[in-house]
Image (cartoon, rainbow, N blue to C red; front, top):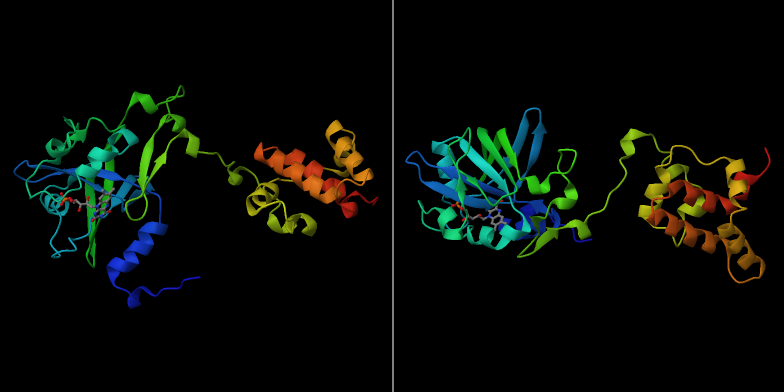
Length: 300
Ligand SMILES: Cc1cc2nc3c(=O)[nH]c(=O)nc-3n(C[C@H](O)[C@H](O)[C@H](O)COP(=O)(O)O)c2cc1C
């Protein structure tokens, strides 16, 4: 373990450890405007959703490392307390990166990076037409902490491209194609192939990791992810269910292999459970695993 106290390191060096580990981070592509009407567009990955009611987004431009001066976004918000936060998908990533160049104050990055400004409904800065999700926000608060300007923004209007909406009128995650920021020059492309579902545990009370019999918990085949799935079951199958499952062709085959001395029962059962868990068949995995739990199968 590399253990670091931020006090012992230059802030920029510690920052590289942070950006490489607090990742992936979504990217706020922020359009802002000054009192004279000059528009600015810049990406910020110190960003997230921080409230539901009211809906809040938070992002944080640092002051420039070079001379400590405030970035154009910060200066604009000090004049006009409104922004549009546009989300960034894969089709936009290179142009978004181009917009992060430190052009002189007053430069319109919509023009420099080739994005299309679309008038907002309730705020003065324009939206990025190419972005699949655009949030018109009023800036509620700024907290200046060290070199950081942390903005708390309330969403007062939101726009979502029909390309990411599913049949139920909600966002269909499989239709989105977001990018996110990692450390150094790395990004993540969060397309359908990179996504997976984890059943929400809060709809039921799982038995928990500690209730899993020790020989299963200490398995050399099952991983922490498998044990997390197993611990999420509300109740173990009954002894009758386990014994009835022994008659299935799958288990007959396993028991035959063991009778012929081909393999060790527990390993075969754990291998099979692993396959079932990969298909999210948690109860079946338990029915397999409990076949070798003599304590469990003993007559009361
Ligand atoms: C993907 C990405 C994320 C960024 N995140 C941040 C950030 O969270 N905070 C920050 O100060 N700068 C961040 N930057 C750098 C700013 O975008 C850059 O300094 C920009 O020039 C600021 O523009 P402005 O002076 O027009 O506001 C990021 C750049 C990129 C490409």
